[in-house]
Every structure is written in structure tokens, then in C-alpha cells.
Amino acid sequence: MNGTNPSLMLDITTHLDAPDVLDAGKLCLEFANTSDWHASEQPVETIGSYQDLVAWATRVGVRSDESAAELLTQAQARPEMAAQIYSWAIELREAIYRIFSAIAEDQKPAAADLTLLNEALLCAYSLPEVVATEGGFGWRWRGDENGLDGMLWPILRSAATLLTAGELNRVGQCADDRGCGYLFYDTSRNRSRRWCDMNSCGNRAKSQRHYARHRHDTPA
Ligand SMILES: [Zn+2]
Image (cartoon, rainbow, N blue to C red):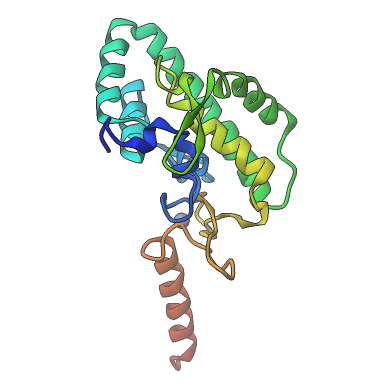
């Protein structure tokens, strides 16, 4: 995605949260999934630094290539600030993960996690403006564009929008029993999604069932 994409003029959250744009279905859940084996005893971190955070944001489409280059330059000039934002991003990600894991299990999220989210929302909804679009008008959040932490705001708005306006019974978690933990917003018509990916956890479960059946059928 490059800097001239007109959709970046508007709230990128609306674009990224639309059905079938991201694999997890919502930007906040896509971010929550940046720790692999998240529900296991030993999650595997895929965002190990501020630079990784920028790379992820660019890959997903929260940042343009141009703005990513600018952020990396700024981060080099202010490494301590970048490190602080990185820690905060991971703290927020874990709160988002816990909130939606609880919801996937029909449980109430912890109040402390909602507090973490709410404190950050003050920034996520700052500097609003209404801009003309082809079909009318839309929101644009100038706070997204500047500053080392700007990529977090669209993610937080995604979480707030999902909590307040989403169909929460579509929030699901991979049924894998090893602690995959992958969260998704199930956009299938009959809400039949059970796995992060049919080719990984889904396939493993299928071959295990097949193996169990086969073993059962085979005379000793
Ligand atoms: Zn899985």
C-alpha cells in the first residue's frame, strides 16, 4: 500500500474492519494475533521491537510505506521513546487479546483490561475532522498521521467499535487444543469458522480424527 492511496485520507479502521480484508476479520484481532500460540504456556512473540511494529503496521495497511520510512527515521532519533511506545503497544495488545478471548468464551472481560483500553482511547479519538469524499463525507483522524504511536490509534478504534457495535457472538478463537489462541471475527453466514486456518490447526484436527477413526476400524 502506498502513500497516495485515497483511502488513507479517511479512517483506515473502517476500511480494514470491512469483511474479508484481514484474515482475522477485524484489525484489533489481527493485532492480537501477532503473538503465536497465544493461549499456550509459551507464546511466541512476532513483534520484537518498535521496528517490527512498524513493519507489521505497513504489511497490514495501517501505515503507508512512506510514513513507515518516516517513522523509522524518527525512531532512530528517539530510541527511548520508540522503546516505550513498543512496550505500551504490547501491553495494549495483551489487553485486547484478553478482552476478546473472554468474549469468545462468553465471559466478561476484566475491568482492568477495559481500563487500559479506555485510557488509550483518549488518544485514539483525538484530532478529528470531517473530510469530503466521493460519495459524501467521512471521518479523518489527524492523530493517526503524526507521531511514533500513530499506528496504534486505528487498532484501538477497531477494538472500541467491535465492542460497542460489533456482533460479539461472531468473535471466536481457534479450537486447537494446544493453545493456538488465534482470535477471529467469523464472517461466514452460518458462523461455522472454528480454526485459525483450515491448512494448519484445522487440518491437524481433521487428520487426528481420521487417524482415531482409522485406528478404531483396524482390527487388533
Ligand atoms: Zn489455530
